Length: 318
Image (cartoon, rainbow, N blue to C red; front, side, top):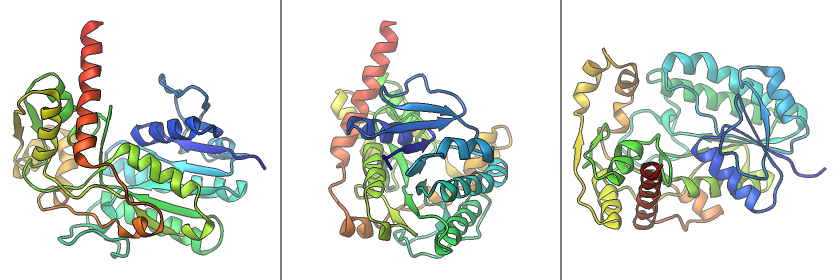
């Protein structure tokens, strides 16, 4: 059977993964509700609603491998409604097609921690969104343990990278920096926080796609640079652009109050435990099995700043 890889979701990670695979001459099709305007040349596309089991089955039919890089609305209510269905549909379709699944996940399922996050930490029942992530983990692990489908979870902290706007240091950070404007962050600027560089995440996805079956049935943390403060990261970007960083931040204690008027900030209030303490991620498991030459912050921040500056200059020229 010839290789066919289906990528669900064309956000930052889905796009970077598709670009990496197509550049290597591999057969890729992207599945989501609407065709992306910037779909990489050489990739196919199939319209699919992840909540529609038949549509998911059609999208995966004939595939040998599947990548789930989904970004559902950032709402606890929507997560409880959509995520279990999305996972069930993916597992059923992969089972029918005999396709392996790489699930791009976050780190919410560990809940509030003070130690560096490890893959063997227990699943949390804390809150809404963390509890949903724990339930999803049990869902794919049960399918894997039953021998129904081979699943590997790739867990990453917050993203950053060229063109990655939906990040704690994306549009509000590098985007404002590129326009020489004040950056107003939700994340505290002076607490160390792990960030995964999106090209590294895409590389890790492809690594798991190419891995032997014994790499499945388990979770892996994406290798990322040691935690740095957002101020340090953005200052590196500012230096690359030759500007002085101007940074402000919303106090975390204000989030529940501001959340009364802003649904988005209300959703962040539940996740304050990700931001109110040093946030470190242990990535040695992946490093020992595969690779550990992640992109240094000095390189990633400079490249990210340059990409936002180029986009801002292009928009201004238009």
